[in-house]
Length: 67
View 1 (cartoon, rainbow, N blue to C red):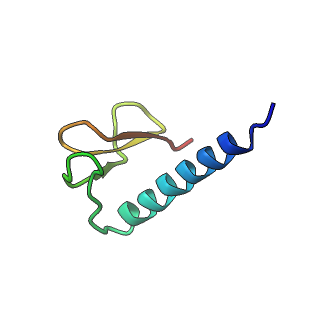
View 2: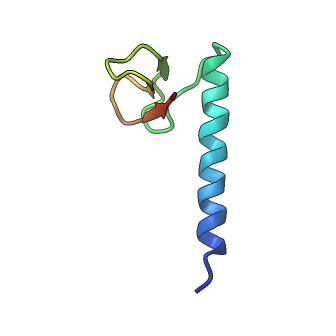
View 3: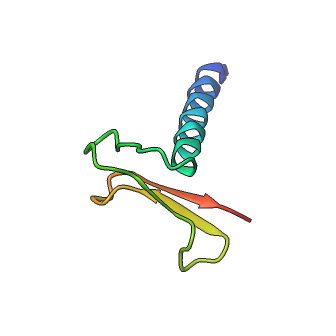
């Protein structure tokens, strides 16, 4: 079975999320791809060792493992 297409897609998605998080960490404005709302980065969540990047509507939500 050839997994190269899946590997490429997964790698592209990871790199897209990594670049998005870099921009948010620098304080740049990043818009949600779905609703065009502004994404926020919250590193002070109720779960220790976790952060979250999300839009107000909730269509984008990226949970970060900070541990």
